[in-house]
Length: 251
Image 1 (cartoon, rainbow, N blue to C red):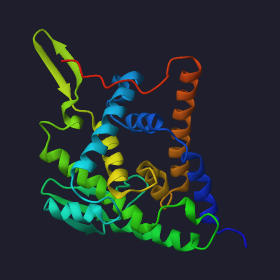
Image 2 (tube, one colour):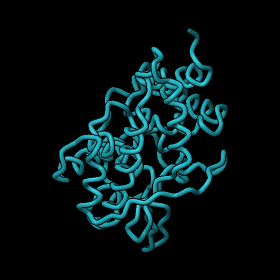
Image 3 (cartoon, helix red, strand yellow):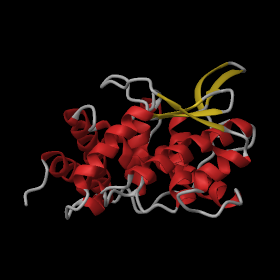
Image 4 (cartoon, rainbow, N blue to C red):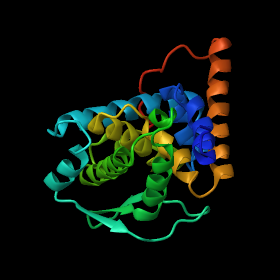
């Protein structure tokens, strides 16, 4: 029996991403940051290492047994309200979840509903194991936003907020900025650790976006593969051996 077309298309999308390294996922996150052109690759790699460690350490210290129910349990412990939003998504506005300033986390229902429909098509095929279940996707999205709530509550000490990029310095005045990508990387690895999931949460970017634009999802995948290729070239040229130690931002 032939694979449903959508299943075959998304399997083709996801399969090459299953071997992407942490370094490449980090560079992908930085490539989407507004400050990307100001951060050299070596610093991106250093911050990636620190962000991954931060995410994993915070997941371990939360006191919740890892698993698919851990994000809901932790949200309740932190007195975070978990709600749903029916706001429609578009190719130009694809938001899957959000952490609001008032301590509420919103999970967008439309992308989850579309993904459930896709999983129903994939069920029973030999490609079904390539994809996280809808329940796993929800848990990863929720855990990601729980981390952002933790960031807000610990902004003076948490790694993702203490690392700064020097934007400018004139005489005795300087302007340092936090870097959004650091928090995104930490949130992804926090989510993976907290849920005990085998899937890297970064996979959700093309996987869920494919429900709105297959061509857009392909562009994301091509960007990631290109980044991974550049890192391989750096390693071949002797520029990269391992993730460097975390560097402190210039003060």
